[in-house]
Image 1: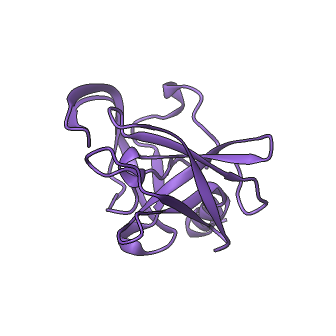
Image 2: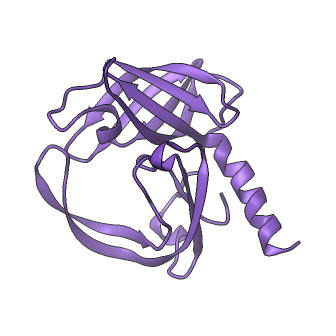
Image 3: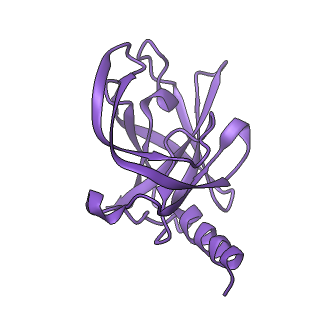
Length: 177
């Protein structure tokens, strides 16, 4: 098969674990991306960034709505928000509209030069894909979280795949999906 067909197949498989996240206060809606990382006891658990579900003061948005790759919708329930690490988890009732993502088991599963792609919802659009390569697997970076605290992160992947506003919380996938 040709490379273009392989990329389409990768997208079609990986997008099944990606959701559009719409967190709202009623007057303001924040949009991002999430990835299903577990299904258990009738629920699907979704990982996203804290800044998708909470504002810079830490106030959580009142409601979470999810749009699945097939454009079906569900309402989410907060599980937890860690503003210091910019990570959040919420759940939805399990549905056939989503699948669990394939998660990297260890950092040696990703190598420099490997092709990767990001699936997300940039600038309000639905389920786009960008492509790049892993340019570094053990980068150290200084970052400032939405809480205002600063820290150094180690063993961070650096990629040339374009990530825009609205991609936050979404997956970076390799050729294994």
